[in-house]
Length: 295
Image (tube, rainbow, N blue to C red; front, side):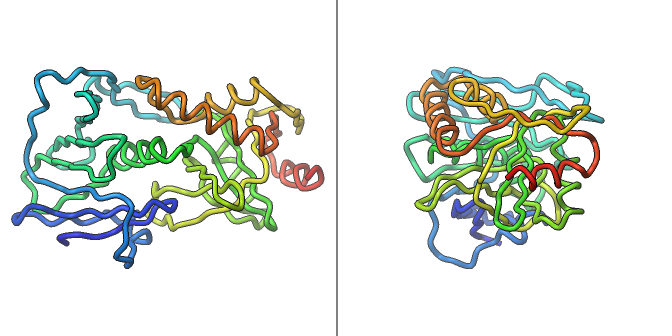
């Protein structure tokens, strides 16, 4: 392909290939997010080769390469992706660890612009411009620009009620999704969600992580901050405590003061609008009946 559009969480993203020797092809997990609409909100031009980062650019963020195995985080390398800043221009350099030749990519963008440029240095003739970790990075900065929230969370919809279960790894997000799936609920996602405010309230949207993912969204009716427990127990959380606990589960790059302030504002607004609870749950399916009973 020379170009294509994706619609993820309502973000209409167009990718345009500038190279004659390569094709840009989305991986299987994006196949159901391809849009036939001509309109788009963001344009990413995809180039083959390298770009030299300006000499005066300052490195503001570094991320090591960490894999999670059985809820244990293992650092594989210190060299994964980094953010550089040159006035209003930002550059993200990254290794693409799942590519056959350990390709490298550089994304040039600005929080004030809606046209970005992506360079991928590879010997192969096909390129996925949303290859890991580019997908998460691009989506994260789109949430930052739009005042939205990217959060570690499992989202389900049961009879029109949208439950958001949020927590770090090991707290039971996937387990909770399985219980609700068996209960007949629609699973929005079990790992990563984008929360967006609309004219009719807050909605949670999934993002492509698994091969069989397809666009799903649900209103957010209640937020649960989850932990395993001996009994099913829920306690309301309000004010600054609710904000800080929800913030702790948000995906965030804290190098930029404006981004931090924007996220804090967005989280404060959702915690004022949507009820927040701490939830301890037994590792069995009784939690679904408990929550439906206590709606």
